[in-house]
Image (tube, rainbow, N blue to C red):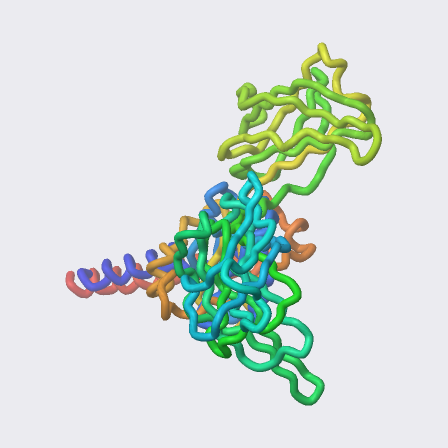
Length: 450
C-alpha cells in the first residue's frame, strides 16, 4: 500500500502539469528568421498585444517545428542614434615660405575686419614670387561651429600622396595642433580614380585653420575647402498603433473605443474628418463595461484647413496605463466634432522578443491562453554575455500574423475538437483507468493481507 500511494500521486501530477502545446493558444504567428544564429530577435507587432490575454504578455510563448516550447526573453526596444552631417564652403588663402621653415616661421600679414573675418593674407618680408607654396590659411567663419572634419579639393593634375598637418587658432597668434599627420591622396589607374581628401579633426571650435604640407614640402594647388559638422540625434523607438477604427457614439453622444484586450497605451491619436474642427476633449477609461468611467487626461483636438496641408492636433499622452475601454468627451461649448465620428488609435512602444533557436524551424509565436503563467527569462540569463563584446550572435526575425489570428476564438484557448482538447481528454481517461487499476491492485493486496 505504501508503494501505491506515491505512484498515484505521480500519475495525478503528470496529468495536471501536461506540457503546453501550440494549440493551447488562440492566436499564432509564423516567425521568419533572417539567417542562422543561436538566437533570434524581433520587434513585437501590435497584433501580439491585441492577441495577448494580459498587458504584460504573460501568455506569450515560442514553439519550434516539433511543437516544443523554446526559452525567450522580453526586452525594451533600444533607441536609435542617427548622425547628420552638414558642409560649409570656407574661404582660404595661400601661405608661401621657404621649404625648410616651420609654421611659426611663416612671416605673413593677416588683415581682418571687425568680425574677425580674414580679408587678405600677404607676406611681410619680400614678395611671394619665388617662394614655394607651403600651405593654406582657412577661415572657418565662427568659433561657435564644432568642426569634425575638413574637406580639401585638390586641383586638376594633382596626384600621389600628400602628408599634411593641421593647426587651429582663435587669434592667429597661438596655434594648437589638431592633426599632426594626415594624408591626402589622388590615385589614377586604368581609367579608375581614388580620392582621399578628408582630414578628420575630432571636435574643434577653432576659428582659423592652418594646413601645411610636410611631404612634399611644396603644397599642391587646391580648388575648394569645406568644413564638416556632425550631430548625433537620439530617436525613440517607433510606436505601434492599433488599427484605425471609427469610434462608436454612446447614448450621451460621447465617442467610445473598445479593444479585445487591455493594452498599456502611451498615446491617443484622434483623426478628425475634413473641415475646420476644434474641441477641448476629456479622455476617460475603464476595463469593465459595468464599471464607472475614470477620467484620465484632457487635451485639444483640431483639424484646420487652408492653403497647403491641413494642420492637425498632436497625439495625446496617456502615460503607461492598461486600457481596454476608452471614452472621448468633447466640450459641448465647441459645437462638437461634426456628424462624422473621429478615428481613434492607441499607440505604445513595442518590446522586442529574443528567443533561443532550439530545434527545427519554422518557429511559431503563440498568444491567447488566459491560464498561462509568465515564462519569460531575464535576457542576461537567456543570452550569456548579452550586450558585451563576444556575445552570441542574434539574428533578425519578424512575425507574420495570418488570417487565423483574427478568426480564433477569443473566449477560449482551444475548442473541444482541437488537438489540445483531445489530448486533455485522453490524459483524463488514462488517469481514471490508472486510478481504477491501482485501486483494484490495492484492494487485492488488502484481501491478501487479511
